[in-house]
Structures are given as structure tokens and as C-alpha cells.
Length: 157
Image (cartoon, rainbow, N blue to C red):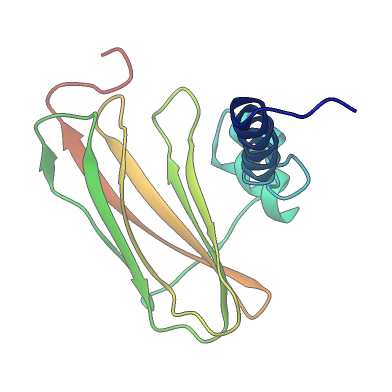
């Protein structure tokens, strides 16, 4: 029986530890099954196609309970801050649509039953256009829009 040196024991322990750490890191990688990708909605060419792909309807009712805050004039269309707030109960999702972009769907935020219906983000705008927020609340769709004038386009403009 051959005795192992201390150096051999350390090499084995480090290799085993590295293998365990690598396996643990693989568990942190995103999985396709965990994140739903609404490909048809992102491929939509206008608001109707986006709403149809996401909610199987082509329109939403205008509502004063949905507020869209964005600058009236955005000097740079690459980073336009947008805030959507609503007083509607049971908000299920908030969808942002930039109607003048080559791909109008900018973002979809889904909420749990314990969440409030507010979101602040930055979106890219190709040109002066309407930014529409569609809020799904209690199974119904409500919307509000705001025109944002863009001086330098963010989508190649």
C-alpha cells in the first residue's frame, strides 16, 4: 500500500472543491423553463399585434387610473425614463409599448397578488412617438399614453 503525500491530498481536495463549486454555479444559470419569452409579442409590428400576442385582444380601454410620466422632450432617445403608476386594484401586469420603434414592445412587468402597480424604468425610443402603458387589472386591460419628442434617436436614428 502506497502512502499519499500531503501535496497529493491537497490536490485532490482542491479538485473536488472546484468540481463542487462548478456544479453549484451551474444551478445559478437561468433556465429557459423559468423565464417565459413572449417572442410573438416582441416580433409584433404594432400595438394591436403586441396586445394580441400577450393578451389575445387587440385593444385596451383608456383609463384615468393609469398615469404615464415621461419627459416631454428627450434629448437622447437611448435612455428615456418612464414611470407608470396606477390606482387600479389587483394589478397583474404592466406593459410598455413604444409605438414608433421597429419593435414596439419595450417591456412587460408581471406582478404577484401582493405587489403594487408601479414601475420606473428606462426605454429606448427611435423617434418622437407615443409611449403607451397597458395595465392588466382584475382580468381587464386599461391604458394611458404620453407623447415623447426625441431630438436624437436611440434605435439607429
